[in-house]
Length: 346
Image (cartoon, rainbow, N blue to C red; front, side):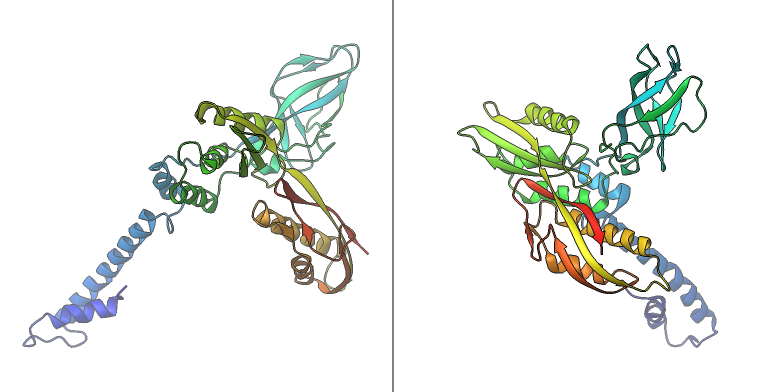
């Protein structure tokens, strides 16, 4: 794109030389002012072009472009689960009251009364949208304010169904999946697209004829690139059932989580870095790597894990790296997804 100086020179070239066009003259100053405005307008035009094409568009404009082809942005969801509340017989649980983990509040979704057993199961929903509501077992354990007659609360199962809104790159990829792959007449691409249309699905693999003629197996992972829970599996199954060709027998399952346990000896710059913070950074970077390769790569790279550890701030060197007690790549099956297990620093 031409800048203001080039535009100004073109304007001046079109003015008859009998007029004074030197710096500071009437024509020079007017051409300069016009060139500034034209430069801004050219920038606006180029910005419009970027918004029009899917490969450069973003945000609302990308969503609108995707909708033209029937690809709709997947909105964030709030995590839901059940908790066990203990208390005195007759104590009331009031819809709208709060319980909490260390990081986020959850709200009771129903009114209940504790019976003679002294405990009861209650549905709750996270106050915030997204994966922030995904917490481990026994993480929901606080009452932000004292609730009369209630003594404790806990979640007996991990919470996994809070999903962040689809990123621009994820939406763009689904758009490309639809327009660039021949999804017709219920072929495997069709089943994959149908599965990925469901909020909470991170990716899907399709295995036609897996159990004879007319059978289709769809293996899914959730948006957090982990195994899917029953609720998500049922949603995908029902969505595919609404769209599939007559006669297809569909099975939807979650990918099996292949836990990757890591052991490593570290030399850490303890003068400037806390070992626990270093460990947290290692966990974070490896987790992101495993998300990146989910349903794309077929192995966890021993060398890549070592590189991520070595490049963590505070790490001077490492040795004795083992993945699941091996010093080699870990193969990931077609129906598996790698997730980080324990990280042991020796």
